[in-house]
Image 1 (cartoon, rainbow, N blue to C red):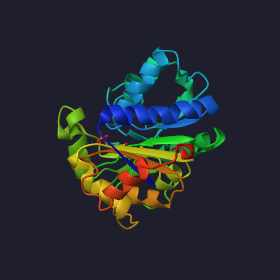
Image 2: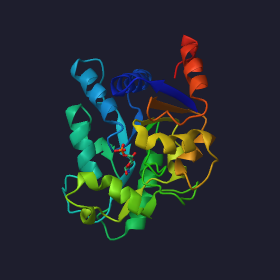
Image 3: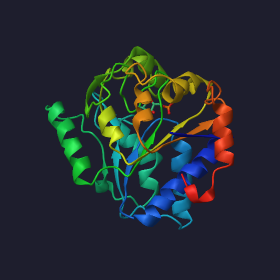
Image 4: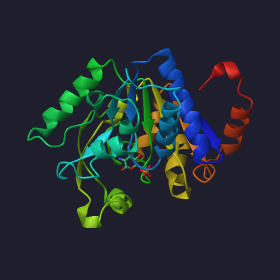
Length: 260
Ligand code: GLP
């Protein structure tokens, strides 16, 4: 796991967009894993900017989103498939039918989860997965207690996550209690994982993710077992890391040929 501590959202957006641009240069039909939430927004903004200036195209790319609420009416603005369209994909040349998400509308939800896994597999797996992290250490919607090998399935949100996400809804009562989410095992199958976090409210979760024990109590800690994880943090999110100086030192002295 490589921890990169950056001054703020602009630098995080630029550096993450560099990683995605270089992937698309090598592999224009790359499969991207897209996350919702506020953390990836600087990345999406920078990707949109680069698309508009003609340096980047998503015309051949595919995308899979991480998770989805169950129980919101069709076209509700907080459905993650709407959020990802609004925040990112409709501003670039992503084909609508190449952006996939778990389908929380059918009667057979567990069938929908299995078929989502099949779709990801059929696309050749995710080349680059973008992730945020919840204050309770969740990734996707894998709440504490999630099996470290879990696949796409139905989860019940913790009250902490519902409170955190209430800012996007009229009231806490309107936040769904259930979701579909890629499992931790699904996320771990991605070839490169790029997690980003900003702000003091993420500092504890980030410490547990990077320096705590690998435990279902902090689902993101499973990423310690992944061979290629890059974590972009601002100073506040990095403020509880015991080895912060070492991460700064190693990034400063990183040979250019090593890449991210
Ligand atoms: C949400 C999403 C996650 C996201 C997390 C943090 O519940 N399901 O994918 O990473 O919470 O959100 P934010 O980036 O807004 O802090």
